[in-house]
Image (tube, rainbow, N blue to C red; front, side, top):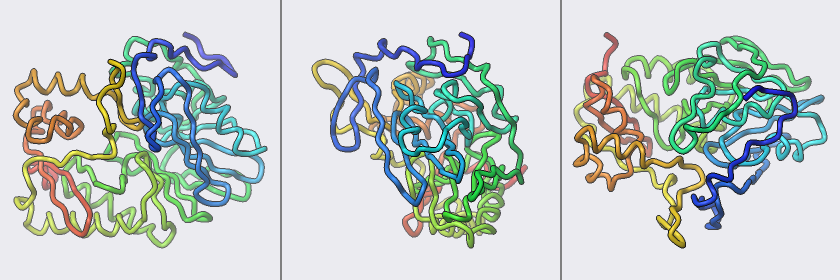
Length: 331
């Protein structure tokens, strides 16, 4: 499928028999568009569709979206209702599909060059759908500035969750839009703990400029960054073996019921985990899943990599850090 300006939203009718549970407990087919916006600061909105959150930032002459989600319907048209200023651009924090699927609805997409190749790599239920990936792209680098006239977004490339991840710092609103790099309820150290510590030190160097983290999984107080710093330092100070061997599942990604009228029900912010669960069982990790009620799929999927077999979790001061016991120090 070729991209064209002002495209219509793709047909999601194949998902009519999959149900999604909203934050307020409402349940509707995945094929039905759903949008919910909340103003979190003057000229700044958080938008829920399906998958991780989208954010909208208003300048003097235009608004921009940060990440495009993976839900049915036209998220650009919805975001445009939040302001009388035009919306042309979307900025991607990274290229995971729950952040980029609806990029094709915008006139131009901004991302890091590292994220370009995998920008439309569909997974799970979406794998057989044809998403346009030839839309206009502008590459961003660390140190760039998105000028919205009256408001600026500084670009930082601090990556761990995904190669090429970008964060956008709004000093005026005192917000760091961080994608999935700084999820407030946990820090996921996918590289060495030593490298993670260097990343957090860089975010700490900017702490005087932001009070809120606007992450893919929600909005969090920036004090989490301080706690990440202290917890990572604690691990590096010789306490790595104190972490528990199995992860605790995250309740915010689980629906209150598993089915309705014979149809499966998932939380609106969670993709279908069944394919991951099946792969883990096939690889011999069924016992690990049982210990976590079958729900810690994101964490255990990393066990499928040859060097990712020693998952650990440590919690201090209300902050979880997930890490590999065999990846404490850089090699």
